[in-house]
Image 1 (cartoon, rainbow, N blue to C red):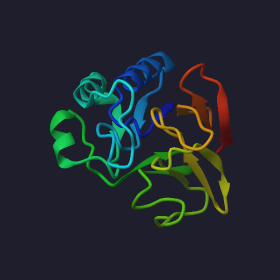
Image 2: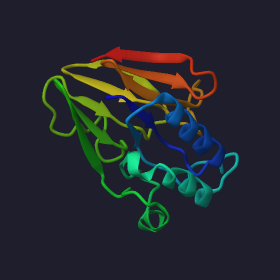
Image 3: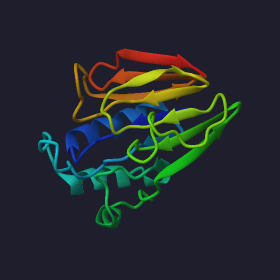
Amino acid sequence: MKLFFASDLHGSASAAEQIVSKFKESGADWLVLLGDLLYHGPRNAIPESYNPAAVADLLNGVADRIIAVRGNCDSEVDQMLCQFPITATWQTVLIPKHRLFLTHGHVFGPDKLPPMAPGDVLVYGHTHIPVAGQVGEHIHFNPGSTTIPRGEGVPSYGLMENNTLRVLTLLGDEELLSVVL
């Protein structure tokens, strides 16, 4: 199974266009959205090409292939625009030998882990900072933000393929980080 991860679009239509295009080109089975899809949030500047309705329309075009979790900036009103569920605080994806615990990162995250077995993978967004690595008995993976990277970061997304999780730059698809499951 091949998974495509994106987080923290924050209403950027240009980021959503790139993500949907790259998802289709990648041949991934599922587009995993880790929250903060439509709204920029009160602490963030309004992103370039801010158009939440257009983001919803773009994502609705692949609604049957989306697994999504709710971010701290997502609301019940956002669900009215999206033709796929976005209000779950967490989701689980099972792959051979591993469980991926999908969450945004504001309820469960690296500092407040959900119940996890050794070898489980915490997949989250929220921080806008890419992560891919072993942390104790678990693997932590964050694809960063497509729209508002923090620190020295660049816009990024994630892919899981052939038992490897990778963070790639949105522009240029250069690998930033990876971890083997």
